[in-house]
View 1 (spheres, rainbow, N blue to C red):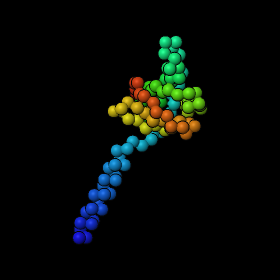
View 2 (cartoon, rainbow, N blue to C red):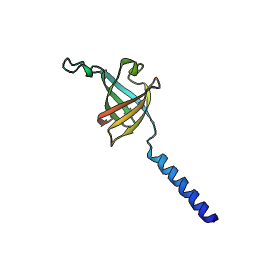
View 3 (cartoon, rainbow, N blue to C red):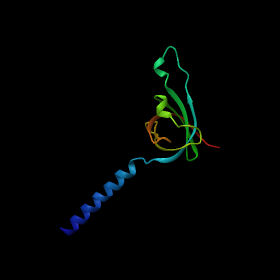
View 4 (tube, rainbow, N blue to C red):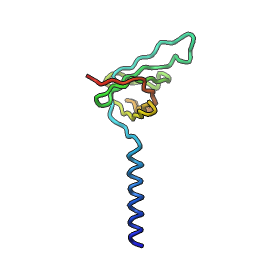
Length: 113
């Protein structure tokens, strides 16, 4: 009985560790660039899109985000942020300099020089 209880406890602990390891954690990131994309007269709904470059480690991710100007308030080159990357879904969740969490779509990446 004691052996089964110990084995069950180990299984539960191992499951918890594996579940935690699979959830991506935020990593330090630096905002490299942020540009508001030009409005398109044919598609006015795209008037609030931004092209954002974010450096995580030795990789610069080029992302696209949408939202009002207040969402990107305080974002500028060389500002520190935190990022969680999901390469399968091509998305990045960024906790910006103003501690607001923003979801971005990764459109490209390149190795920093």
